Image: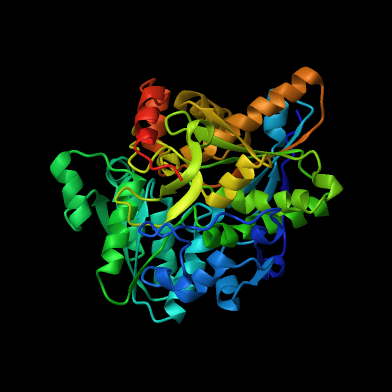
Length: 456
């Protein structure tokens, strides 16, 4: 057996100097966020209560390239550029003619892609005199990343962690606390909205929508405090394109180009970051990208792209956020407590949703046990134990490679390996012991949630 590992590296000076903004290449503009009271497009000044001005500018910009501050690039050097691997052992296990590649974001201090934007957001807030950031987190990857970013730039950090993940994943909670963050299980007694949720159900498992509402309420009711979001919004996806821009250089260095790209999607930032520079090629008519397939992978327990509808909806349960045009399951959707906590969000990034709705991207959904089995196969060949979220696109890549085997078809398959699963051992233990339940969210529950939307 050929056991050679192929790792494609870049020099740290090749860290991108600008982020790529796909809005510059969209055939039609993105539908604007709407003020929930007036239903008019949100004005920049209306967002200043929760975001610093520079992030608002980036959110609304249609410039193709936005410069990365040197202070941010200097922090990126702690772990970037991240390696691109060819999964030769996995290819041999599957006996496929396909060539499988993955970019490994698990080398960052928190072990995921999240600090690519956390560091940038903390920097821009610090520059405008903000003293504290609030945020929500599901599985804890985003919360721990923001804790790191705030520590590096001298900000305080308060994190509302979805209660079921707070209990399932104490290690990520502890990691954020080591970096100085205050961790609060959500729903909580800290906010008016949290208390209202606990009155209805003292044992409420929480949701990202509820945690977002609490974090925003905290931010707008305290001075020198802003809110930070780890996915969904345009500026977050923008910062994550550092992944895809590095990836393009790495593929160019070995004279490859992907035929199909997979990534797990909860809000959409990690996969958008990896894929958008390539989707941009497609939008600009690059012949290399003409037949490129870009596929989002999500859980059947929270099938936002595969069963949600494309419409305006709130990003949070309390309806405090602007209305965003996105695929949604309804803002009061509460998914089952699956272990892929980062994929338990009712909506997805408007940019990713638009590209999906317009046919440039597609989506598939998987059940828990099959994605954990894929993660086990990957760990037993490539060695890395990946996060439950990432396991979804590992499953898709394996399925695609087996199709190539059946057809004797050579393809370049890429998946975004967004983070390690070292803090997810309880989930892996449940899988190994046969205790992991598969959830497929009932159609009637989805319809019930969607029926409450005021469609626009």
